[in-house]
Image (cartoon, rainbow, N blue to C red; front, side, top):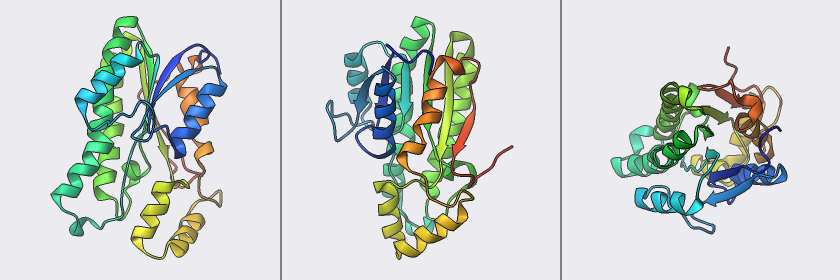
Length: 233
């Protein structure tokens, strides 16, 4: 895609799953990638603002930010507690906000940049057993739209990609937590018009497009990559 070779990108949660697939595709396009992950080098805890500040400074000027890191666990809302909410919020909402707060000033100063926030269709249509997570992902969508409006004239483009049901370790753990994962996987598969769950490699195409020069006139948008599970007009 145009304009990716020679650029530098930060990808959070890039050590496994969707994040690792995104990193691989960027590198194939000639993009330098810095991975922020608890299981990587450098090890970065995105819930720690000071750690994010330090890691962003060490990375140097970046052209692209992909806020991908996330975490969830199946819990009906009435069985959750504030401690659980705070963990979900810290990882899925405050963490991405910290990255944006630390990366965007440099993009503005240099006259532009691309941000792709990875949310979830849970933030668009809701998902049983994922109330705090859905709330965070809905917040990420709204945050992206707001910042797109604030920074449009500064050359910064901010868009959101919402994966649907995707075969990752997090989904596997989520289904085990719900009980009877095989039955749940089959129910999920039947719900997807394309007839299968997503795979990590299904997501990077949309992310790289929105990070490329081909998307210079696109900002504030939310795109589902879900096999047709959700269809927004």
